[in-house]
Image (cartoon, rainbow, N blue to C red; front, top):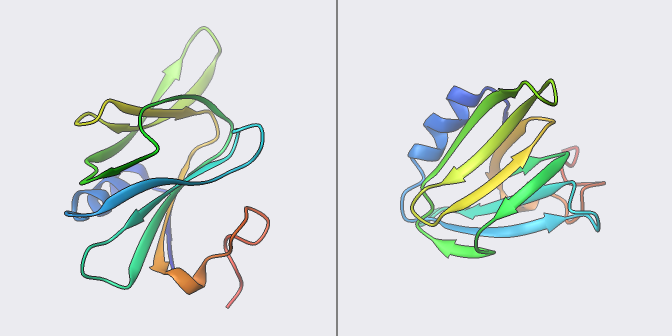
Length: 121
């Protein structure tokens, strides 16, 4: 499993995931933690984008051919960084204040809840 936190590296990986399918996959009851699953065409691998302290979401729960990008900006009013996952093709937006993680690997490497999501191998 590959785990990436650098935003420019996440964007490079996301740009290579052509012909994929995105799905809102994991979330806790407050929706403060969310994971988007990206099924990679013609591959046994999957990628997950995990965000915590989520504050805003707009868009579909599932769609084909995602065109994601991630970025960070400073909110001066709240005096904190805001992290965004955007798909301009579908008008999807997810914002959080605790960063973004991309994890890529074989499905069996991931758990089925946030408590065991990044399983020890």
